[in-house]
Amino acid sequence: MRIDLNCDLGETVDGQPTADDAAMFAHISSANVACGFHAGDADSMRRSCELAVRHNVVVGAHVSYRDRENFGRVDSEIDRATLVSHVVEQIETLNTIADAAGTAVRYVKPHGALYNRIARDPERADAVAEAVARSCALPIMGLPDSRIADAASAHGLRFIREAFVDRGYRADGTLVPRNDPGALLAPDAVAERAVAIVAEHEVIAATGERVRLDVDSLCVHGDTPGAVQMAADVRAALERDGIAIEAVSL
Image (tube, rainbow, N blue to C red):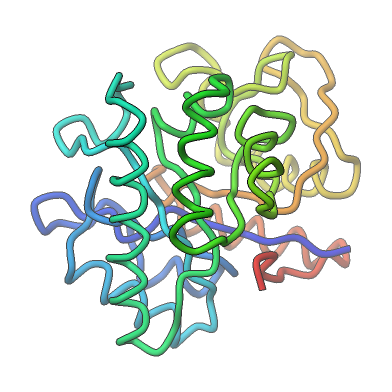
């Protein structure tokens, strides 16, 4: 068995990091690098790409609504053409910086409110898939059995199914909203959950139901308290069970 382990990184705000990026790169196989719309800037993108090269980590474009004020966590009703152009712009910006650092963008993962919207909204999902197909034709990472999975397939793109080891799930397989009870898992339960997702293909919902979950990648959020130790614990638990950590987008 093998699994990808990814993390949202390069998410600086006003030049200040929201995670211990340098420490986190040692534990992951894929880095979702903020492209400047919800967080990050040219310097943070460059540093992230250089760290990725140093640690043999794959780089993904973490694209978002243009919403630095809310960290990309508020939904937006921008028109389709604008959304397509914004996604293309973010991918191309990061890829230029990645190329200068000796690497390249290998996949695209939407962020925050956009990630949640395209999981359920087929029109918005199709716009994001169109943007990716137009700019780079790379794999898209998102929730399994979602509208963005369908849209990626329709545009001939590979889809990477993702699960969150530190977030609560509903019985329908969607995430518990961040402001609701059960949204974040207790740190000491995260490693056990990671192994269960990979080995048993299931997650226990916040309300107790067993939810089937077949995925290619696990995400540990870099801005979660204790995130570096959590990622180290997850990796150690997976490898202890004979599960290799390997980038899925290569």
